[in-house]
Amino acid sequence: MSNLPSSSAAVGQPAPEFTLHSTPDQTVSLAELRGRPVVLVFYPADWSPVCGDQVSLYNELLSEFRRYDAAILGISVDGVWCHSAFAQDRKLHYPLLADFEPKGDVARRYGVYESAGGVSQRALFVVDGEGIVRWRYVSPIGINPGADGILDALEKLPRGGGSSS
Amino acid sequence: MSQLKPPVGPDDHVQGPRDAAIELVEYGDYECPYCGEAYPELKAVQQAMGDALCFVFRNFPLSNAHPHAQRAAEFAEAAATIRRFWEMHDLLYENQQALDERSLIGYATQLGFDQALIESALRGDFAARVRHDFTSGVRSGVNGTPCLFINGQRYDGPRDAESLLQIFRR
Image (cartoon, rainbow over the protein chains, first blue to last red):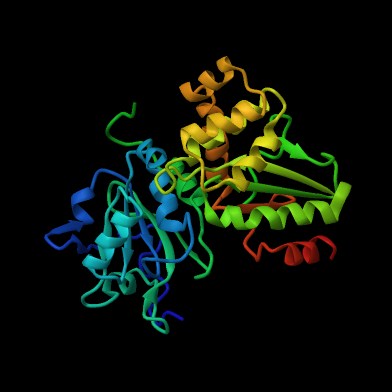
């Protein structure tokens, strides 16, 4: 249902830059993570009523992502206070970014905004250390995509720079 | 897209014939309430299907969300070494509200663990086995718990007995 060109943030293209709040007084920019792979997890909303929902699942997998030195960022249109309550409740150990104002702007620029529902789609991106999109996947909105695709994509990235343990 | 990796093998915990027409794999967490809800449904499915179903359980504890899930899974694996895996599995799901260490030791004693096996479980000797299941789940596209695979394909539909039986009998 996106009315944006499907080429937004296409594989092989530079990932659109953004700076979003992770807490009321902190921001995260994609650019500041240059040099490491970044996993972007767009999801519709905090507080989805299942255990081991997408956000909590990835929280359990941080050690797997760390093996690739990858940073992981959750992004939804929820505001910072909502994110911080949710992160605290689920004991999340990675940042959730508020794509709140202008609402859904980053999701739109990645071509994954669901305008009918006013939320982001469930979409995953793997961005390499140079800021190029290397993999993207949009899941049906009711279906949690799991993490196998992310890990396969991270595995296929050329290993640059730092050595891993 | 999500397929069971690796396929069911000799190290898996299995109920029913390995060559049954339907193979149902559950990735589960003993402290997850949705797994608890699925437990009697899956039992009913097993009962109704009899020898036409092979049921397999793999561990997928979400440790941040559920502080007792990992240790509970380790106790079930410890039980497997004295061939009491399924009894422990059932006890854990039937007592989801009591999975603290003291309760786990109680179930272990009930199932005939000796002191050495209890200590071994408490030491974390079965953690690697649980982690092995967890990693296979991640690679298979497990997207929450419980997560079911029917004949190797992830199943995202309703998990009540009636819905599952309808699929199996199609």
